[in-house]
Length: 303
Image (tube, rainbow, N blue to C red; front, side, top):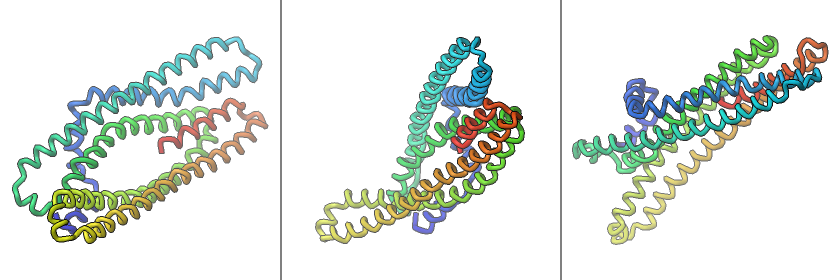
């Protein structure tokens, strides 16, 4: 594969048919996937319900009523057991899918490589093939295991939090929901920047892997023709390019997280300001304000 083909492949858009084929490989492990998604759903529901329980506890404590304290303690113990069990299921099932899917993808890819004609190997660099067989297959397995389960948790939790906020107090809920357009714009901007940089890293990784292979298999030729310094300089250029793109990707990824935290902090400030005034005029009690502070912290976590 020449440079143009590699560039075309790297810059290609989302292809539904390719992803449909990739998703078909998860059928053999759907039991693990379903259990993991079930655990993620339970965790999301607990994340939504837990602040509401604390709200009632705060309201009762504020009123001086401690008669139901033993029930709250028992409920907290049950919640902790449920969270621990679901996190265990979450990690175990996602790990099972990841390892088995990674094995399946590499097996299928290797079987296909054995059937390809000589012409394919004449035009395709070894580094490109090695990168597809190693890092790319691992990344795909990560997306289809941890990614799917984590996305199920995040989407359900965010949806549940929005519904719970509107049921609790629609004015404060509108303040929180008002940050969503900002999150969408920021996420779209940073996604483009990060994706572009990681695609460049991926392409350079293919070249470096190929250089490793050529350097090792052609060591005798290199020494015979005294090409060590020339090969080293070429390899140094490739690794320097990958380092530059890696730093750029890390910079955008590093900026994205504090930017989201900044939006969360601004949203929190507005909620505390308006919610605090509502507590002072006794429109709401302090338990409701606590719920929104807890929900805002949870709402921005999956973003």
